[in-house]
Length: 362
Image (cartoon, rainbow, N blue to C red):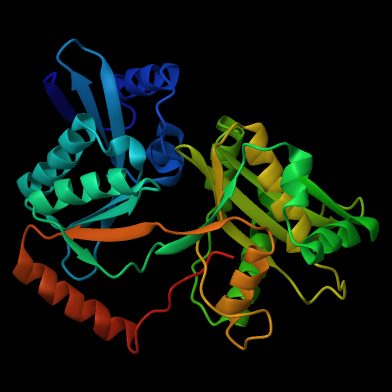
């Protein structure tokens, strides 16, 4: 086994640029959250990129570090490592996780590292689990990512894919398009305020909590790397003003999969159409055209369309598009200073009061 060298650099560092270019050439399945366009536009000045390099000088893998301030201890930070997929079940992946852990310890200001494991292959997941456990991480209940999801295989033709949906789902897609609804990509940041308004309305219906999204930053990523990030909207007819926007969906490329990241729809427009059905179908078709292996529906719960639980109704909507249910998301944490972390958790619980709600992005 070749020796692996690791380094943590700022996103604007020349080594980071060279690493991404080289890994793209060998088709390494980068998650968007580890991409330079994401770290530069949607991150903070504290975000970093961990890079693995072989003894021969070949770039082997990279992982983004999302570094956030914590209000519990002024001057301290938390690290999130998103979308650790199958490709990181390797010696390079082990080296990256080790480097990130040492970085958290060496700074003296990190309260916690949270690692999101999202491996579809069970052997790969077991490998990443062993690496994290060896480094001193412990698994916690998944709160930021769903533990179960629906995977839609994208290897069939577009017609076969559409035919795999339930008859009700196919009918609703056609109905929306027959009644003047138009689906189009969103590129204008002027629509951002309207999108956050629709998002707030959607979360009010499902009983979840949300924060406004800085869509200007997200749209910069969509403009720079349209093959990795895409937002589409459902509009009334030919209009493209904020008032014409009725629903939207954001999809992101996370390695070999495309993730149904955030979506929302309004019921206050007077238009009684199945708004999300045609835009989700549009994003699935786009994911197939981008040669992604599968489409990740970003979480499901139990329940039916008639259930009072808003999240269960969303899951029923997703299941109409077919796919295979799988255990997927896990969260692991490493705490360099357990005492500080315990105090921080206590303060966070006090601020949240009764506690948080898992935030479905649908």
